[in-house]
Length: 530
Image (tube, rainbow, N blue to C red; front, side):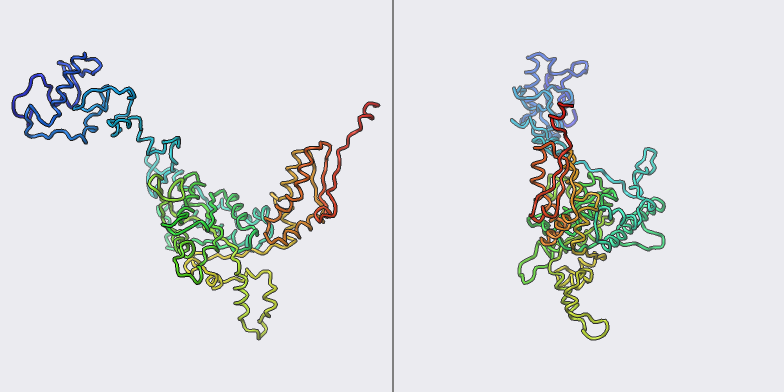
């Protein structure tokens, strides 16, 4: 052999035979299970002498194989025990699996042969199963078809003609949300323009290979800020809007967000929730809607000398998401760590809608309006300002800055709309008009017991007055109705003869009980006579 000097033992195999496997004189491979016990001992002794530090053959140009390289040399293709080292004595462990994976670097250590590293890093340990699978997106201009051409599925199908017009969006919202006509118009127009912008960019991508127009006009994204008292329907309208448009929606609470490096959810976690709502489809998630509720809780803290990690810092961290940037987000988790896969999501085409009650904003608006001159025909009396029930519709950016929102954050929310405070008439409409009205839900529950449930007009008014007094918005309606329906829903299954129950105003005002109508059943005595 080259690089080997000295006398060679004729009984010792050459180096090529040692590195590959034991061979017969005719050159054919011979497995160890075909050897006799004496041949196994002889081969073991020869390999031990070959791998020892004192080389009887006198190696002069080659280095003794490093133990670290042994897993790469011993492929285990023709060996009964692929984890056996040439310089190691043949030993059989009672716990050894004959089908062990030869690629396991810990297989030579006692107690580690049972572990499969593929299961460990793929999320298979302890019954966790496979990790989340990400649907990869096709880069612009990439050829992914079988014939080397672009497939139609590489581009998300979104046609301008298929996008519902603003008046049709409002008509759909009217079936589920009562009132708030001005807010519904503004949101319908904003959503229509947003998805029309996305469809235009996709059409340019298909025809021109770039999302930009030839005239150089780039339509920017317009995010939405919703201001309204609690229970006025902000979250319900956004959820209904996403269902009508058939786009993924992620709803998160701003109170759980903190600056990176502190306890709490990272800012990028809102994008992770949207990706999960899109079944880890990046292309579909990049056309979804993210609704951040309780955004008023991120206002700057006044008279504080410590770092505001859950207020102003979160506003600053959300700037790049609102404007549009590629962010690396974890898949299947709310925080980044080494054991969670990562993917990149572009927020350029994600519509951000933020909302909050903003308590105390009315006083800030009234203070600004009261500073106006009280002289002239256009002046307003201070008493008229205090009685205005639509005071939130007069909000301006300076009012929100005085509340504690930073100017950079407000600049990325160009559309600001306000929800009205619910009054008694709106409560009555909420009880009966929407498709998913509360009264219709209880009527369906009793219909399963073959009982008809009705309400008198006075009962509707009485329930609406109680809801207005609690100042909890539409959420108060369910708690009030549940209070009066509990006894009825308890007694109905006990008596199968009950056919109809009417809720009256006297029952709501605790002056009487509900009107119960029994089924028309003939007495048993009359049935026997007939």
